[in-house]
Amino acid sequence: MKDGWAIVEHPRRRECMMYLFDRSTPPTLISWQGPHTITLEPSWSMRPVMVGGSMGQTLALTAGELCGASADGAWVACRTMLPEVGLRCAVVARMRDTVADHAVSFTMGDATASATLRERYLPGIGAVLYAIADFPTATMGQRFAVAVAGIENRSA
Image 1 (cartoon, rainbow, N blue to C red):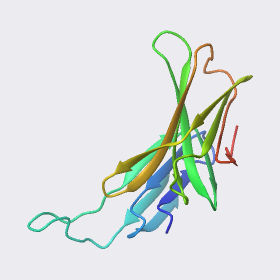
Image 2: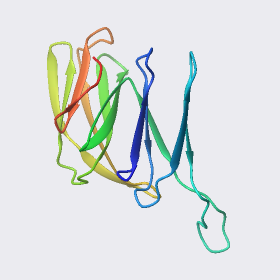
Image 3: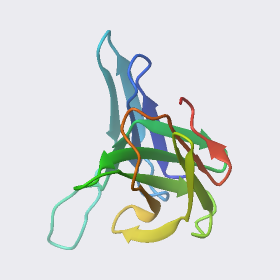
């Protein structure tokens, strides 16, 4: 929690969600799993957002079909079809070391593409890292794998 992320991976489907939140005020997380549903409910003590304004907290949520986590950080990756042909793959990460120079390896079938994580700042969340790679001849039926800063995906 102190690193500003939590990952929920559905045990029966190829789906995962990464919750990102402010490292200085992490929420308390409550979870529940049913036969077809998993919930993760963040709960914070409310605090003023601005003088004369409302009370609240910020939470970022990203979904994907692959994820990975270690003591160094966590990530979620997905892919989508490009307008003409091929696929675009993307990863969103939160690393303990916020320097955005970690290597990312995307694999689609027999093809591999490398990328470097880039950093974006989200108000109320902090630094979030991301990378994108295009595979012009790939199809959705091919094996998809990702590694971020040496953290391999949990399922292929």
